[in-house]
Amino acid sequence: MLGLTFIMNLSIAENIEEPSDELTQVAQEVIAGLSQSPKQVSPKYFYDEKGSALFDAITELDEYYVPRVEKAILVRHRAEICAAIGSGMTLVEPGAGSCEKIRWLLPELDLAAYIPMDISGEHLQASAVSLSDDYAELKISPQVCDHTQGIDIDLAADDAAPVFFYPGSSVGNFEPEAAVEFMRAMRAQMQDTGGLLIGVDTKKDADILHAAYNDSAGVTAQFNVNLLDNLNSLLEGDIDTDKFAHHALYNAEHGRIEMHLRCIGRHSAQLAGHQLEFDEGELVHTEYSYKYHPDEFIELAKSAGFAPVKVWQDEDRWFSVMYFEPV
Ligand SMILES: C[S@@+](CC[C@H](N)C(=O)[O-])C[C@H]1O[C@@H](n2cnc3c(N)ncnc32)[C@H](O)[C@@H]1O
Image 1 (tube, protein in one colour):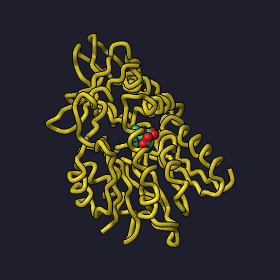
Image 2 (cartoon, helix red, strand yellow):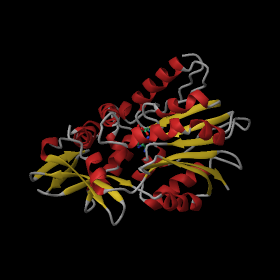
Image 3 (tube, protein in one colour):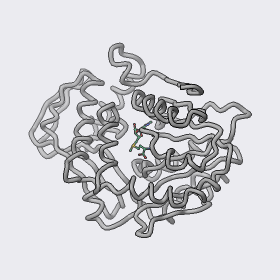
Image 4 (cartoon, helix red, strand yellow):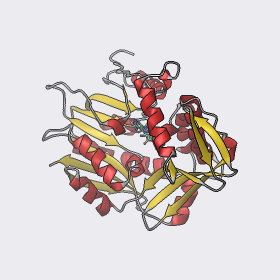
């Protein structure tokens, strides 16, 4: 583990035993979302340890084409992508999860440091240790944080400029205006140099998208329902997960997958000391996954202060990897 520095802020999960300001904030945020009509919960609550493992299982599914196609693009164009990034940079990856995708670039990427960030602390720690075992020379500084609360990467004046790596079309989980805000937060960490390498899923046949988010093995369904288990354990709740079913559809008008939990039997529950009522058929919104034509996404990135350098796509144009520089 030489050279591995952990910047471990207290994770949400570690705070269960002793209520803290962080936990109070979580309770307020979750209860506020479940008090709206329609009810909603932020997708960041998918990722307890089990949720992170289920997400890794989703990435192995045939129907979920995203990692397969994105990998093909990154590996095929690796030399050109790494040349665009340049050498000696600090690569910062929000929502790094299992730190798998950086491995696809490392054979040709000369980095000063790698900063994987994630809300799921234990998963991030294990991933960083495993990466360090394979790349002993790489300086890895994992940071446990909720990147929706702001990005602060604490670079010293003489540290290399940050290049953000945001693969997996995670940017699609934000509504477009929030995606611009998030990219602005990344842009604010750069001066004149730096960059953003980002994976963006494209609009395509609704059947392909439907299958990707409704896999036949039911892993995405388990992942979705596990969010309620996570809320129960974070906030001492008794939501009956058997009363909820996975529901995901493609809304072509908005160009987004909409993922919900559908209540399949009227249900009362407690969460963080609050009484919740769910009607039969009621939907709890858990995630959007916006899809963009490359030109649409470039407009969003421009309004966040970036200029496009290059777009790489697969032959079927199912996915885009784009590199931007600050303007
Ligand atoms: C869909 S997975 C993507 C993982 C990986 N980047 C990839 O492309 O396969 C999203 C990752 O972001 C993390 N995450 C989700 N919301 C987050 C937040 N608000 N702050 C920090 N990490 C978050 C999750 O724990 C998870 O590891």
